[in-house]
Structure formats: structure tokens, C-alpha cells
Amino acid sequence: MDTTRGQGATRAAARVLWILWATYGAFYFCRTNISAALPGLQAEFHFSKTEIGTILGSLKLFYGLGQFLNGQLAERFPARVLLAVGMFTSAALNVVFGLSTALYFFLFVWAANGYFQALGWTPTMKVASRWFDPARRGRAIGFIGTGYQLAGAITFVVAGWSAEYLGWRGAMYVPAALLAAMGLVTLFLLEEAPRDQLDPTAADRERADGAAPGWRHTLAVTLANPRLWLVALALAAVDACRYGFTDWGLSHIMEMQGGGLGKNALKYAILPLGGIPGAFLAGWVSDRLGGRRVPVLVALCVLLAGLAWAYGATVSSHPALSVVMLAFIGFCIFGPQVLLVGSAAIDLARAGRTAAAVGFVNLFGYLGAFAGDQVTGYLADRHGWQAAIHFWAGCALVAALVISPLWRYSAASSRAAARS
Image (cartoon, rainbow, N blue to C red; front, side):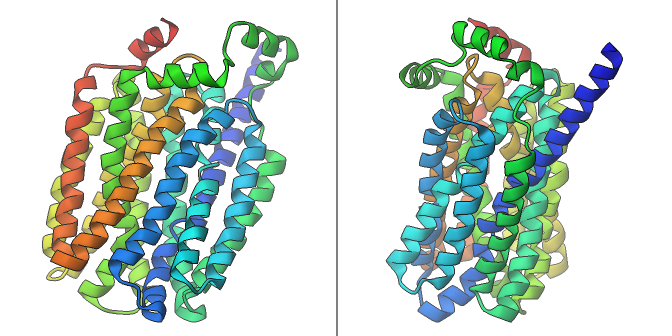
């Protein structure tokens, strides 16, 4: 009987993992798609790169604020419902963006999209923390991370070809339909916690133990955790580099190498595809190191800085080599990103406050991405693409330096601190 129950629980966990993988990945259909829309948007409305950077940055700013707020909401409301609301509303806002014609309305719609996109990650991590213990957490969250790398690659191709044949607005409409369809799957099929955690008696005990404290106490405990601040600041630097490549990279490679949007979208899809093994292997290796995330983070961030600098030097003169380099850049971006926003944040959270910790860390990640979009647009306008790419490389080095004080920290020591 116990063996049968154990096998059933394993199958249920695997099913939940796949749904989380597909759910959070689907959010990227209506976030990364703007990269394919940018060349047409810029050509039709004659926006400068600085203005485009402001549009891009508006999503990051409101996504970050949404992460902070929604981390608190995810502690109190069903994850399945929050995810579905985010998916359906983001899809609708992408359609509205495609119908827009004025700069400030583009800003408003893309900022609103940022907030509803922020209903994705914290509920996903809340469900993951309930289903997977710390010994398996790095691999589980690493696997979930591969979903949004694959979705990002698919989005580059789908949105790129949609923009090629339907105009830039097609890059907004087609991904919106895909996200809405996945929203229905999530709403009806996601199981939020193992059955024993859904038992009313267990829930009563959890509340009695203080696992669901008030907003103020949760916020105070989260803000008073100094290790979380280091993770948050490191993620800010990583995301500045990450969104430099994912938001601006398609426009950059088109300017450097020429060719049509569809062809270059196929080239650029190699970056998130490279992120798939990066996300999974970073989690797997850190689990094998006893939950020590930081050595993996530092190594990948230093390598990322070198690759970014080399990519800027070769993208025009060696097109084939630069595409190969994009795969390795993706590996080195998404390995650290998934660890910082997932496993490391959950490891360092105080007991019962995982969603709040993840939301806090992701707030800083997207503040970094917002600043990165602004700086990238400014540098590309005033000093050329090379200066912007050197900025991305510098951000990767900053991330390695910021997180290095936690070098010896592990999941085991985190659990001890969380109980204290």
C-alpha cells in the first residue's frame, strides 16, 4: 500500500512539474515577442532607440513592482487562479499593444503587461516549494527554467515569422493566442500541493505554527534577511545583461549582419536554446555540491562576461562563430538567472515565506533590467553597439562580485537559518 501511494505521489509530482514547466514558459510568448516587433515598430513610428528602451523598460519596472506585490498575494491566494489571471490578461494586453499608435499608450500598455506577467513566477515557485524538498529543488527549478528558455526560442521564431508575413502587429497577436490557450490548461489541471498539504487539519496546524503570518510581519522578515539582499542585487546585474541580449539582440544582429527578420530570428533563437542546458545543469551541479549555489553562479557569471565581450568583437566579422557564441552566452545567462531567482532565493527564505522572498529578489532583478534597457538604449544611440555590449559584460562581472560573500553558503545551512 505504501509503495503504491509513493508511486502515485511521484507521478503526481512529475505531472505538476510538467504543468509548471509549460505554464511559466508560456508567459514568454507575450514578453519576448516584442523583440521581433521592434524593427517594424521603429520603422513605422520613427522612435529612437532611447524611446524604444523606455517602452521596454516600462515592462521591467512594473514587472519588478508586481513581483514584490504578487509575492505577498501568492502567500494568500490560490496559485492556479493567479497564474490564469496573469496569462489571460497578458494575452489581452498584447492584442491591445498591437492596436496602439502612440508612444505613451505603448508605454502604458507594456507597463500593464509587466504587472500581469509578474503573476507568473512567484505562484510557480510557491507550488514548486510545496512539491519538491531542498535536496531536489535545484534540479526541479532548473527543469522549470528550461521551459521558458524553450518558449523564448519558439517565440523568437513564431513572432519573427509572424512579423515577416503579418507585419509587426502579427508578432503580438499570434503569441497572445498561444498564451491564452495555455491559460486554460493551467486553470483546470494544475494541482497546487500534495494531498496531505491540502488536508484541512494540516492547514490548521500550519496556520497555528505561524506559517501564514500577516503582511507586515512577512514583509519585515523578508527585508531583514541580509543574504536575500545579496541575491537580489546579483540578480539585478544578471538581468541587466540578460535583457540586453534578449530585448536588443535581434535588432543588433540585424544591423550588424543584415538579412530579413525571419532569418535573423532563427539565428537568435540559439540563445534561449543554449539556456536550456544552462538552467538545468546549474541546478543539478549545485545540488551535487550539497546545495552550494554560489560557486556555480560565480563561475558562470565570469565566463558570461568574457563571452559577451568576445561576441561584440566578432558579430560583424565572423557571423557563423557569433551564432555559436550566442548558444554559450545563453548557457551562461540562464544558469545563474534560474539559480538566483529560484533555488537560491527559496533556500534563503525564512520558513513559510518562499513566495515573498522570490518576489523580493525578482523585484530587484527587474529594476536591474529596467535600468539596463535605459542604459543600453542610451549607449547604443550615443556611442554605438559596442559600448552597450561592454556594459552587458560589466554587469555580469558585477553579479559575480556581489554574490561571492555567500561562497560557502549551502541549502543545509539555509534551512538551519530559516528555522532560527
